Image 1 (cartoon, rainbow, N blue to C red):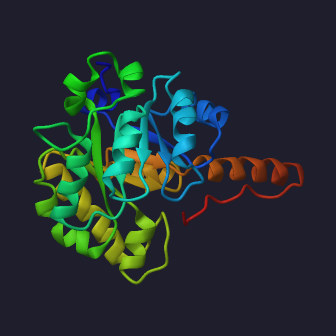
Image 2 (cartoon, rainbow, N blue to C red; image 1 turned 180 degrees about the horizontal axis):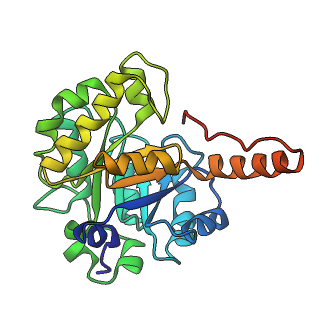
Length: 262
């Protein structure tokens, strides 16, 4: 089976940067994947991508060295198994708040005896190799999104769930859960403290902490805080900023600021 490059990079001690797709277009996916990201995630939760659009985007990503990932719309085994069968090499699942929810996520992503994933890798075996089923449990990544105060309180036990590879922070939802405005670059102390606590607990457990970011400076800050898997906005935001900066440059205006909310 094709090795998961993210696992290899993390084993080397290096951090990774992730691209994010919300535009359901295979050429857009190919452009993002060729930009140099270590992985590219298709967003089925908040983007415009239905399941019928997942395979073309995966095909665009898989022409490159970027690891194909999918954020599923919810912690539901049917769609989770389908995106893995389609060739996603990892799943990011929103709003995992309890140990039971983390176990359910892992079960959908792992073949027996580690889970209850059904066998049917219709495209995954084309991308991963003929021996995909025999090695998928060792290569596929499983990330639970930690986005609420409840999830942080339960995090020490969530991190003990066998088969979980890491957690992924949605700063906007985390901010909302703490009574603050949604933003990718929080300034409220309790949100900042929560973000740091998640990284510390996850690293101590030997798992990988990931987080969504509003720009390069925030990514570098998150690396310093212990995050190892950071996302640079998404394709729609980056496209909008590039267009706005071009127009502003012609008109003698300042560059556009990175959006602070998702």
